Length: 554
Image (tube, helix red, strand yellow):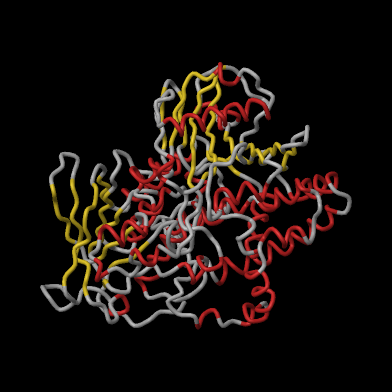
C-alpha cells in the first residue's frame, strides 16, 4: 500500500447526499473512526436508487441490474460482513431478453458463458469461437482495469508504471482510441450480435459509436458472469447499507437540503491544522461544514472537519461554492458531454406478461440514427426508441399484488430538461405523456401484448426535469457525464477539490464513473484519499475480530 506522510486525522465529517454513494461513504468513514452525518434532500435516502410504492406495487426508481457482484461483496467485507449475509441474490436465466426490430424471434441471453457461445453460433456461423476470443479479451481488460484503474484516485501516476500495464500499453492505447462499435464490427456481422455487444455503452451513459472499445470489458459481466437480482429489489440494497451505516454510528438526516459549503482561510480559526497535509496542499480555503435548510425551512449550520459531496458534481461546484473556490466552474462543464436523459415509466399491469423477461431490451434497426438523436448536435427523441423494460415481478412476488405485473420502463432521450416533467395517471407535461403513450404502444406491438394499454392500472412518468428538481442533476442527465475517452479514468477529474482543503467528491459524476459498483468504489476512493493511499488495488479487507471464547484451554 502506498501512503503519503500524514498529520492529524479529521474527527468529524458531513456527507452531502444520501444515495448509495453517500451512505456507503459515510459507513466507511465512520468505521475509520469519524463522527459522520449524512444530509439528504429527499424524505427518504436512496437518491437514484429509490423506491416508489402504490396500490400494492413496489417500484425501484433507478438502477435495476446487479453486475460486478465481487465489488458489492468487497464493500460489505470492508464493513465486516458479506453480500451473502446481507442479500438474497438470485441468478436470472435468461439474464435478459432482446426484441429486435425486423426480427420475429427474441434472443435470450443465457446465464452462462458456454450457453451464450452456443447462442452466438446459432445466430452467425463461426460467431461462437469469435465470442470466446472476445470474452477472453474482455476478461483480461476487466482484470487489468480493476487492478490498476478503477480503485485508483490518480493522486499519483507512479503506481500505474507497472510491468503489467506497460506490457499492455500499445494494446490499451488502441482500445482507447477505437470506438466500441467498430471494434465489434471487425469481429461480427450479424446486426443482432453487434447490438448486444454494443449496448453496454448505455450502462456507461454513452453511445457505442463514441465509447472507447476498452469498455468491451463490460461484456464479461452479462455474457460470462451472468446477471443477479437482490430479492426485495434495489431498495433492499439501500436499506442494508443504511442499516450498516447506522450500526457504525452514522446519523442520517432526511429532508435537509444543503445550500452552501462553509469555508474559511487555511490559517484562520481554531483547528485549522486538523486535516492531514496531503488534503491541504496549496489550497486557498478550508471546508468547515455546511449550511442547510431542514424540513421546516429553517436555515442551519453543521460544522465538520471534512466535507464529502456525494451530490451531483456540477451542482456541488457551481451552486454550493463561490466562483473563486470552484475546481470545476461553469466554463468547465461547457466542454463536457452528458450521458442521456431518461423517460421513466412505472406501470402496474393487470394479468401476466410472459413475453417479457425480468430484463427485456427493445432495439431499433436504425441503431446509429437512434444514438445520433440522443447524443448528436441536433438532438430529438427517437421514435421508435431503443428502450429497456424491467419486469421484477417475474422473479420477485413482492414487487406486485397477486394477479398483476410490475413494469419499469427506461427510454434513453437527450439530456434536455425542457422535455419536461412526468406525473401520475397522465398528469405530467404533455410532451412527456405523449412520449409515454408511444412507448407503451411500441412495447405492446413488439412484445405481442395487444391490450397492454387497457390493462394498466397504475401509471407514473418521470422526465429529465424531474432529475433536475429531485437530484440536482446536471442538464437532467440520467446517469452523469458520459464515458467517452476524455471523461474516463484520470480524464474524469479528481475526487478532491483543488481549491478547498477538506472537500472531497464521490458518486457517478466523479471517479471512477457511472453505475452502482462504481459508486461503491467511489466511496472507497474517499477513504483512500483520506489515508493518502495512492495504490491502485482495492483496500485490504480487515481481519475478523478474534472470538475471546474460542481457542484451546489448558
